[in-house]
Image (cartoon, rainbow, N blue to C red):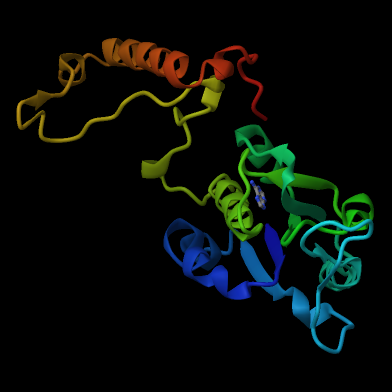
Length: 230
Ligand code: ADE
């Protein structure tokens, strides 16, 4: 997969994408991530990429021209899924991440200021994605969340030890509680069943705990049809 990110803050990405699993995924050539400075594409001699909103109102709106031209240049002749990050898009979830992980090419446009000229959403992007019902200072963190959630799903990125099986949101359940050594930490004990060596009992316990936890923290997930991922 190739992911291109268009941003006015290219320096924000390196520290995250060049560490840990995302770094390894790039080294193993499972993903190519390129970060582009939107200002390199503006026709404005002062490198401006925004302007006042038509109709008045506070703040600035990201202009169409640099984004249209950046996407055209970066895309070339490839088929690319173009995504805008902004609070007024579809809220990201595991199902969306899984779908995006099937794409060969993605361009992510990081929103800023009071928003992006709507013509970008209408004519350039296929979708807008939000990472939750809160407003960030910009779309860069959202882009990183997208890159991370998608990259880890690419075949061969996670090792055996980091398996995707049983993690939260599989079958619309949160993951069961995990413990590690020591079995007794300052008097706080690990549930006996986990020490029993009885794998079918352990599996049953984990399933029950996943349901209990989901009921408590995310009852909305239980109302969804199971297996809707993919
Ligand atoms: N930009 C600002 N807030 C955002 C959010 N919640 N999701 C995606 N992009 C954003």
